[in-house]
Image 1 (cartoon, rainbow over the protein chains, first blue to last red):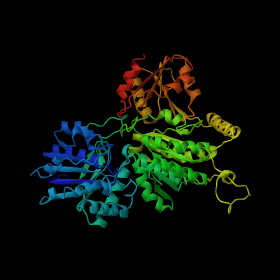
Image 2: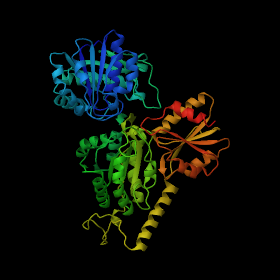
Image 3: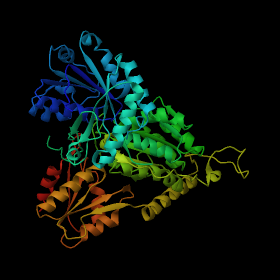
Image 4: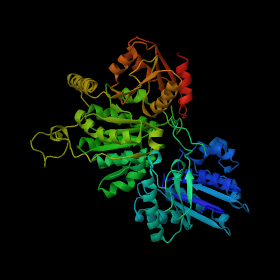
Length: 230
Length: 355
């Protein structure tokens, strides 16, 4: 199943669910498939491990990255660049918005409400069932509720990101997939794709997985590790 | 329970709850605010208390109050916030109460920055506040180790009736790793009746307890300081912890590094090994008490020509290393403290300059 996305895709979810890794990997994946891709780093909440850390790799793939002005790159200030609204209003191409964690992070979206008018907006909730607060179906629904209230937008689809970083095994992917099916059923939302670490994707049997798979090569790694070749 | 993927700050918060600590007072500051955020949800679930103080100074006295009443209590902050707490910490040391402080260090001095740093080494290991005091200081290098150290910190604080600090850098708070939680701590401090102000209703004896750091009688104050000194001597005997890496074979250079910085050093040591250069590492897990004997022996090993302190501060650990090495070989420093964590390549370059 081929993963193809277009229009405005908002990546949201609770803290540390993997939004930024997904935004980076998704952007490169879609660019490789011939789409025009732009990414906006809207994480105004947390100063660590943001999309901006991956600006070199995104530039290498000619993905357009909208960031706050350089002098504020390392600040934890709520800076929303006016170019984000401009990017949203672009007539074509895939436009990925990587927002901060939970309702606090999603609040920024409500201030962009005008720009979204008349546009097709997909809002994808990323879920890692091995994270606190999203290890139960009820927990996932509660996070969705909070994000919807803060952003004044509706979640339109789910993304499964089951992983324990370097300790992820095939069993985690399969368990995570089953969990995501349960969340999809309870919420009535489609499971748009799930992620699999690229090192695992070639080695495991994915036949039981009935949704597109996005291979993930971690780009936001601690300083003693090297980001994988993407 | 299987492993979960947690941010260091979340894991620290959960670890405190599992250690039976139901009292958390704090004031938010980057990069440790997720502890407060997590506990604002979690404390009500377990019947605990999270109260946000009006400042870190206030928080330090909330800690003092709860500790004096014999409750397990902790706080978390980051560098400038810990400076504000230093007054209360000194009072708690003087009054000999147990409490746990977590410092997720950011760059300094002043407001500094919000990225990782280890520039509070001197502050943490030299007692933080005024007077002849120390904290027992544990320095984790992974999220799992942060969990274990937070859970160990409470019984240690109670054993010594002295504050214990868990000293991590911004990365420890912000990075995510799979973690497993040890069983809940079931032990409660057993000697509370001897010193805590728990109230006369439940007291077994008629003795009234007074918690204080004020001793106007010079003989009493001197005795209190001697009692503190004895505790620190006991810590030096019983609590020193360290890890050695690549020290079994011969090496020309010995690195001393702690916290997440030591993980960069391990990667550098592995890469140097592939290039045919042997380098050893001693990683202090306690920075007070400092693993003097381990560093001394590792530096005195035949063939070792230089010791390199690698830290995200401007050489603050060098004093402790020199005191341990006692002149057997020269002690050098490499580090950065603006918020960028030195890369393995930069550490390799610094090591090669000594070869």
